[in-house]
Length: 468
Picture 1 (tube, one colour):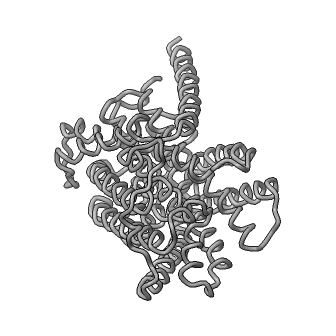
Picture 2 (tube, one colour):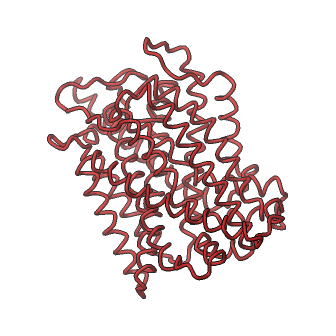
């Protein structure tokens, strides 16, 4: 692939494309981070995490929080050092200067956002059907999911200001649902009806040791923690990112980590692990058990619907900004960097990622019996953990690159620990992941490799034509 700019050098704005609009202050950024982390994972995976480790379901969420916190420190050093859109792909490009590696990182992160958003869109349609009592078949739910993605497309094209304002509303709704679970569970627990002995009990599958079961559960629970990294792709649209990013990201991670641990402890204390693991709506079951007269069965599908809608919106925001940033870098085709002249949104990247999401939603909907959330959620965390390992290494490599501006520093120990823990949760013999996650990730990365070869060939041909 021909270089349009030196490795590690961000292409400057030539004046042909307007810059992205800076609209996000500390409050909007904090809500963006919290809203992105909360969502599909905790609403859908609490029972499945409990199914892996038993009553100690809080432990995988706590471990996932610390792994995310360590990697977040590496992200903070890089985003305050290089406050541009493109995130991990930009950092790896600056550190290693290898276009094939940069391309694959970019493609992996993009796919993680799109797979997460696609699963969320399908969940949105299913919750809408349940909430309104529709006897909708698979085809109808697919149509609802695709229509929802078109709505996300319209919001993203409208502008990031509108997108993050909608995020504020959706974050408040999904946060209220989790707080509702905690408050009602604590009321039940205060009455002496809970069984706290379950909270420290390990019940693992027969084919796994306790250590491997905890690793598998952490790999799954990590899907509930991803989202903090999406915010770095909004760096160009954030006011004074070097100052506000560290405080807001660490605060957002702390708030969500605390909520996750409380929800998982309450869930196991209120509902026996077997029932929790078998339920497709574990948090609804928790509240039904704690307060049988509370109309949560009617309310929670709508709260869950807004929660997964928020996940889809933010993930599509991330994917489009990632492609926009790498289009400017020359790592991906230049048309992806096109910005709408009046709305100042990356229109080409938004349309491109939405088209891929529509195809993926259709594909995963062909088999309505497949565990879409667990499989795609696990694949999302698999792709991102591999990327996180590279980001942690990039911090160490880029220490030699001095910048005049003050920036966050992660130290020397944390990036090493972060790289090791991320790789541990990626490798099949240590993570305990099912083979299906590796198969999906392998197919996606193979598609990315084919696209890179095609792009390289086209650029080489263009270079020959120019020199002729």
